[in-house]
Structures are given as C-alpha cells and as structure tokens.
Figure 1 (cartoon, protein in one colour):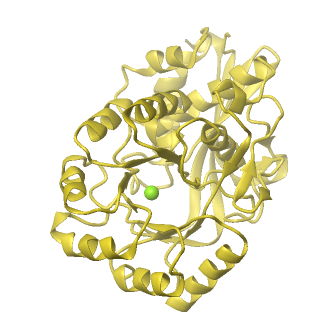
Figure 2 (tube, rainbow, N blue to C red):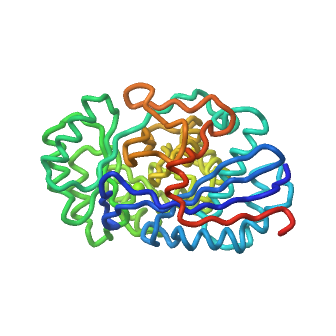
Amino acid sequence: MRIDSIDVYRLAMPLIEPFRTAYGDACVVETLVVRMASGCVDGWGEATPWASPLYSGEWAAGAFQLIRDWLAPRLVGRNFREGRCVQDALASFKGNPFAKAALDTAWWDLHASIENQPLWKIVGGQSPRVEVGADFGVQDTVDQLLERVDRAVAEGYKRVKLKFRPSWDLPIVREVRRAFPNLCFHVDCNAAYTLRDFRVFESLDELGLAMIEQPLQHDDVLDHAELQRRIHTPICLDESINSLERARQAIDIGACRWINIKPGRVGGITPALAILDLARRSGVPCWIGGMLESGIGSAHCLALATTANIDYPSDIFPAGRFYTQDAAWPEIQLSGPSQITAFEAPGIGCRPHSGPFERQVVGHCRLEGNCS
Ligand code: MG
C-alpha cells in the first residue's frame, strides 16, 4: 500500500511509582508513537527507547529526530507490500532498531487493518490467549518485595521476574527462594555484571531459577557463551539480541538457552518474526519482553506472543500496572490469571486514547507524500 503520511509523536509517560533497575530509577518513560496513513486507513506503531541511552545506544529524542529527518522520508509517498520491503528501504541506515521499529510496527498495524484481520492472526498466531508474568523492580525493603510476590502468587501468576542489581542481588533472591520454594521465577540483571562476578552466578545456580536474564554486557555474546558453559541455569539474552544476525551468532556459540524478544530492540515485527523463526528451528525457546510501552506497543507485543515458540510467560502488563491512565484505548486487561487475550478488532485493536494521549505528547511532526 502507498504510505500517504507519517505522524511521529514523542510521549513522556509518568510512572505510578519509580521503576528501579540496574540502569537506575526512572519516574517517566519516554516513547515514540507513529501513525502511518494510507488512503482512509491508518496504522499505529510504537517503540520505547526511554529518555536516555541507558538500555541501549538510542534515546527517545534522538530517535524522534532520526525518524523525522532520515527514516520516514524514505517511506512516505512510496508503496510497500511487505514488512521486509520497509526494512529494506531503511537498511542503509546503520543500527537504530528502536527508531526503525516505530515505523515497522505502524506498517504492520496498517497492513492488518487494510486486510481487516487482527494482527495476531496476520503474524501467524494460533490463539489470542497469551500467558503473562509478574515483574518487580528493586523495592525499598525485602519484606515489601516478598509481600508483592506473595500477592502475585495469590493472583495466579505463573512466573515472577525480579530485577537484580549490585546491592539488590543474591541475599534478596535467597530470601525469595526461602519464602517460595516452588515459585517459578528468574532474575534480570540488565547487563550489570561481568565475568569477574562469576561467584554471583555460581551461587545463583543453586537456587533453581528458570533463567538468568542478560547477566553481562549489553552488547556481548562471547562472555555470555563462556558463562553459559560454566553454569547450569539457562541464560536468557535480552539487550544483546538487537538483530537477526546477532541472534544467529548467539545461538551458534551457545551464548543463551532462551531469547527475550522485544520488537523495539530488534527493529520491529518483521525482524522479530525472523528471529522467532530462527530460534524455533534452532531449538531455542523465546518469550516476549517489553519496555513499559503504552497500550499501542503492548498490543504489538501481544500479537507476537501468540506465535509459535513462545514457551515462557511474557512481560506484557494490564493497563494500570505502571500508568494511571494508559495512552491507548481500549485498555489491555487480564482475561484470566496470568493471561491476556489479544483484541479481535482489525490490526492491533486499539488506538490512542485522545485525552491521556494528548496530555503526554512532548513532540510531534508530520511528513506527507510529496516529501520523498
Ligand atoms: Mg531484560
């Protein structure tokens, strides 16, 4: 279809409580939402690199500029029949997967909307029902964490994920294991350690975790392969997997036994589907992660989570978990314990919720067809 116009919005979304990880404590999440129009149909995409380049080398204000000045002009006014063609048009620009993902995801919603099918069916999902987990950042006290984990267990969550950083690491995890001997849980280190911290992982190995997420450097696969050879607990890569090529390299050298796939981090739905396919053929199971997107981005994650080879509850959250008012409508809600069901409406099934969305916009630009 021909892309007639592209609108790019930068949003600052205030969190209900600070989200504390190895990268620091965040009170606001910055995200990019893209509207792509073709004729009288539009599609919406989102990528959430956050306000500063802490998770990866990208940040929201930079990605906004990049899309406005370089990426969107390559797409607007042109026809794209497949997501692969959108990626090809952007391929000469190196890196910047979040910026590319904002456009790629909008194209997929537009495509599914024109086909009058829910996105989860278009990407090959088998059932709209997706298993999701509970996720807890660093808390003020261990007791506070134990209380929240206890509530998650009582609510029927099938797995729990804990953020893990120096000063909030082994002793905390030991307490959780002591209190919940049978709990399925894992830790996410957000790249805070190196091989010099091997003793930490050797000790974690005794605690029966489902996996250890991104223990080492954000762009590493070699040291992860070394660590995986020395511990039994499966390593799950997140930050390190930012392209299909990097996923292939990681799998080939045994750097991980799980992959957390985030459409933003890998460049959109198109590369995410390619990585899912590669991982399935290689016997490496996956799950879908998130960046605390609004409902727009979460709905894209939901569609991906309906596909084959997703074997662990994903990081997709009901509206209200992190934000007082979600920027999208209808809001994503639990459809059962530890379960969310993707919308049946065409595309991602939700759109910006005008009041909350507009209140959070801190930047906007529009490109039209004659710009290419
Ligand atoms: Mg992670």
